[in-house]
Length: 215
Ligand code: HEC
Ligand code: HEC
Image (cartoon, rainbow, N blue to C red; front, side):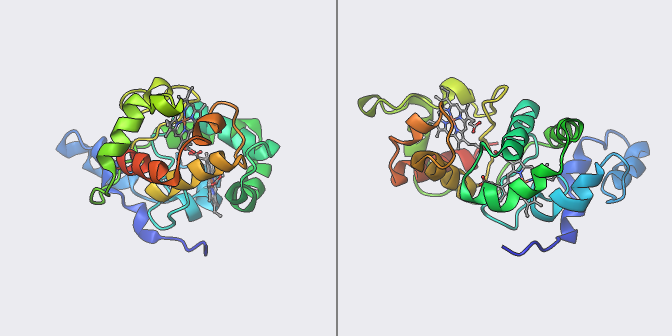
């Protein structure tokens, strides 16, 4: 993965939408899409945006998660886990350990707040096969295999709650990758691991197809 900066990401129409409530605030909307805006934390400009994009919406690298509209508590929790090396899957080690190492508690909080405040992630790509099978797994689980309904923790619309992450609109490839990591135990979470362990690759792809299409 080559970290290439995408200048196109700076002018996000989604970002402007909330600001434009009347003709007089158009100027503010334009300012909001300016890369030098003071409210964008310095570390976003110097580091995070290379991979995640300035608003967290990154659309270049399939294995990089979207961060926009993710829950503040979950974002802070994951950054702490990268820093402590308790989230230890391969991509975490390669890409996020060096980044998180340099962050102090205060920066972690302000970065989490910044990305949580961006317009929520959603995917505009056309639906993938497996959506209806995936929807069933998400809403009902698979009783015969002892797999609980994902919505029990991730909420019915997959918008998440506290440290249960938002999954709606997250990237398909990233979701499948994380389910594989949790299945194999390299991302060792005591809650998710026993669940992911029971999913087949087909079921992971189906549920990811459903979730990546939600917004
Ligand atoms: C070199 C590329 C790169 C840079 C720079 C980078 N990230 Fe990441 N980030 C990744 C990748 C890849 C992952 C997925 C890791 C995995 O699979 O475990 C990730 C995962 C994350 C996650 C976990 C999201 C989730 O849904 O679990 C958070 C939070 C995060 N990054 C925040 C940041 C912040 C904040 C910065 C800047 C301080 C940053 N990242 C800089 C590549 C990068
Ligand atoms: C009992 C609660 C619970 C249930 C049920 C549950 N999850 Fe999770 N899920 C979690 C927690 C907690 C995390 C955060 C794990 C961590 O901190 O590493 C998580 C994380 C995830 C992630 C990683 C998201 C990211 O941004 O990296 C995916 C994907 C996921 N869950 C999918 C599912 C699917 C699919 C199901 C149903 C088959 C499911 N979960 C059922 C609690 C739950």
